[in-house]
Image (tube, rainbow, N blue to C red; front, side):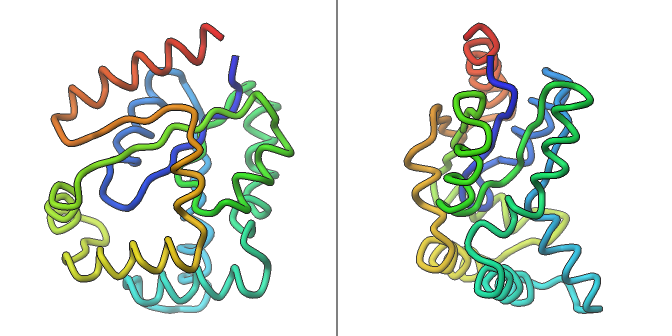
Length: 185
């Protein structure tokens, strides 16, 4: 059985919804990689904007390496495993992070990629209550994450893939099947 499940996908695909569902279903503690950037933004007294988030994501990787989020969150993942034997990583962003996590957790790491059509993602992100994005901001973020942050390889190399263009219920049904397969292995 997998003890660490990682979620990957572009913004607006439904990673947060998948995270909430898997947490409730499997009683999995969440380790949110994006919190590294948000913590840094707050520590510097900056406004939470797409530009500041992008700038700090790239700055952290330039100064500490492409696996910085995973490196900084490894103690939290290990603590979750020590206390409950499981962990859910919300938002693996780079191939370097994936490689570090594979080296650390081997076959006990399972990656689930969440996908959605661009038009669906744009609609969701425009309505998102926290950190909404316009279509142009979404497109710019996609390009920056693919070109500068190695985000595409973890998505392409995921163990499971879910297309989340439908309802929340449909996403949960797909995730239920995947979780059953993961826990049965």
